[in-house]
Image (cartoon, rainbow, N blue to C red; front, side, top):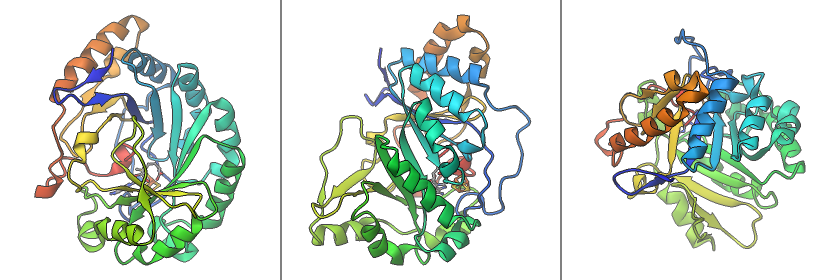
Length: 323
Ligand code: SAM
Ligand code: SF4
């Protein structure tokens, strides 16, 4: 049973936020830092386990754990193990703060895909963007992760005009000898970053033009690939991908659903509202109902976001849904 929507898009990839809490203050996400505004507790491991069983019955194969900062959850290794034993290929998106300390335990629990957010290769600028003086710690964590032979390591870099756009050559140099997939993500507008967005948003086409002129070529798309467009070059061990939400056909490639740390299903990152799955997560006996509920809800998934018209839905900060 594969989950599909009225547009014929098929969904097999779940992004689950396991916490809203974050210890960084990225200027485009939580510039004032995390402020508690939810009274409901985060999903427990038992609730997550039921949620994953339902998505597994819907043929979901890939899970990305995100946040807030997922590594702040002390039971993250347990969640990874549950997911991995449930047949998921498990990925983690992290700011890297605890990477060096925890990555071995996560790998031993079944983690195979890692996305590390790294917005600058300059320690001072890194601190300016994230509010944290953690550049050296992140590099150690990344080196440890590289030594463990995970299936795939990606770096997420939000492309920021006037902040890190001049670092493109350094980023290229960085992946020359490292087998890393570098993702340049276009800055996305949210309720909390309006002025920052106006000041720092830039389209990534200019970078793609530079790559094509310098011998890079587009990689063939994997069947389960999401909306990123990826490029490679024979002299580089790493690859470069672009996530460009304003690009034509971006939403046509959508293959993912998102669930918040409190069990709310969000059909589109830049849509409005969400539906709570939590009441179905209290008892194994409710699984068939949950599966049916998710299937029915998919008919409400919007064909596309409306970012082109300046409408980003009711998204206040991506930290609530893990990006
Ligand atoms: N805290 C973890 C981290 O930073 O990797 C996971 C959550 S974070 C919300 C997931 C990804 O979303 C990060 O790579 C972050 O850079 C990206 N992100 C957050 N806000 C964004 C925005 N407004 N536009 C583009 N990317 C954003
Ligand atoms: Fe925290 Fe990630 Fe948002 Fe940065 S991007 S503030 S690390 S949730």
